[in-house]
Length: 179
Ligand SMILES: CC(C)(COP(=O)(O)OP(=O)(O)OC[C@H]1O[C@@H](n2cnc3c(N)ncnc32)[C@H](O)[C@@H]1OP(=O)(O)O)[C@@H](O)C(=O)NCCC(=O)NCCS
Image (cartoon, rainbow, N blue to C red; front, side, top):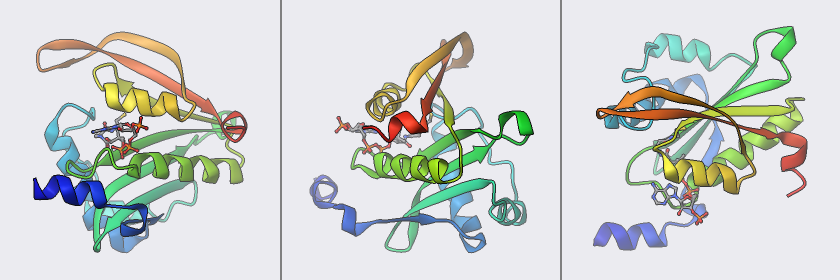
């Protein structure tokens, strides 16, 4: 009950969203791992990079990592990975994970909007993501932000014994800025 009241009163000024730096590596891994441990939102079940590997990843200028911080604790991570090749450098793949207990209060919306601005500033024209068909909250948020379903890979995953589709969603950043 106390948590619900706290949640209702948590406002945008209570958390900050900023670009990550190598000192955030440990907390980013912990945040990602806690969402992976839930096993129903992300494909991976273990974060594959070591702290050192994560520090190196955070130095890549072609990759944006945003973190959401509340009282010096990282509770959300967004990554935007630009296409590696000349042929797909105009695209990027987005991934996002907010820790349980901090969802549904606007953090994801703000992080994605900020990432789309970064994409536009860096000449990225198309931002893609993949989401499980079972993740209704996420799909509705992405649609709300202007993402459209571009394709569906049927029965691509099995989660808790049920087949789940892989929903491919995309947004053209120039279009997103019209909203
Ligand atoms: C999906 C996710 C990124 C959305 O971020 P969020 O900060 O929870 O979303 P927001 O607070 O910005 O909410 C956006 C909308 O979705 C609803 N919503 C999304 N997730 C919700 C949740 N877990 N609980 C309640 N409401 C939720 C909000 O009510 C809001 O609706 P509205 O715009 O009509 O008011 C976040 O919940 C998350 O990380 N979930 C677990 C991991 C995951 O699914 N990652 C994405 C894999 S593709």
